Length: 111
Image 1 (tube, one colour):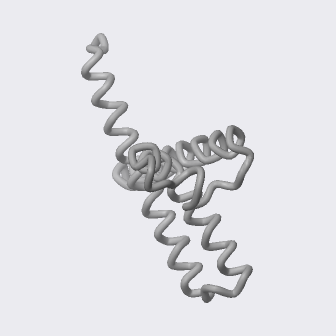
Image 2 (cartoon, helix red, strand yellow):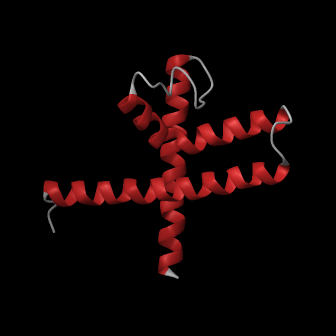
Image 3 (spheres, helix red, strand yellow):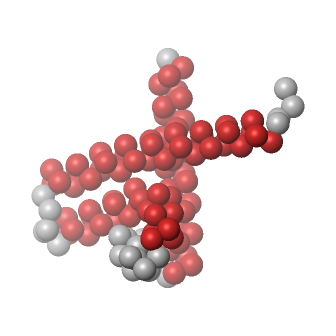
């Protein structure tokens, strides 16, 4: 049961990081988050990677919903994008928790 709780916690952490990052990017730029300029650009690869790593699931869901509304993808493809966003959020949460754990050990928390 503890492993399930850890997975759910990691998913919630990833979802929170994704939402905070995506919302902050939208507030700063005034545009919806998507896999397009100004968020993703071949001229700024590192910035694009950071934006995609932090807000990727948010970007994917936005793009998939837009494509579904325009009839460019099917409902099955939309569900596939949703499942990918869920897995991506879980992976993001695991990475964020690992970095936080590493930082706490590096700073030498009192035991």
